[in-house]
Length: 195
Ligand SMILES: [Zn+2]
Image (cartoon, rainbow, N blue to C red; front, side, top):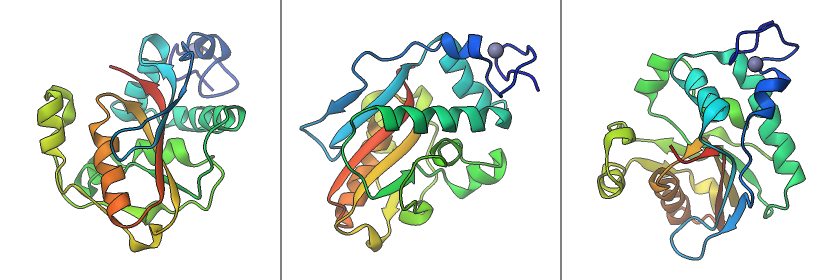
């Protein structure tokens, strides 16, 4: 097979040379004291090969990247000391975008994480404008009422999973919905940060 990033022959969807170019974040686990998100874990800087990986998976639909990236997320999550969690919850995308793209990249990235996974813990009930072109304030407003959590999250610690953490407004909107439904703790794990 070929590396989904450099195009050279490789034994996995991402070759070792490209993987070695991912720039790790020095202190990836961060406890947050304000807002509904209790902790954030971001593995790599959204730069170079890592940002290319996110974009090629999400926009170019190079799904051969999903397996190696999901394995990477799971391996890193095991290596790091992260707070205990009961559920893994990929940040949902609206069904219309799901139909258009064919997959939810967050779901693909989360599939190797060990937990009583519950994909339907959180629903995206409202389509929103893409966050990319909005400023932080507009991003927060854009997401009001966008998510609803399943009551089964009551008393649970939930680990949200996404490809990239930017302003954090999506994570906050998800966490808020989960906490309204009674989730005890909410953290987020993303492959990259920034961008
Ligand atoms: Zn490569």
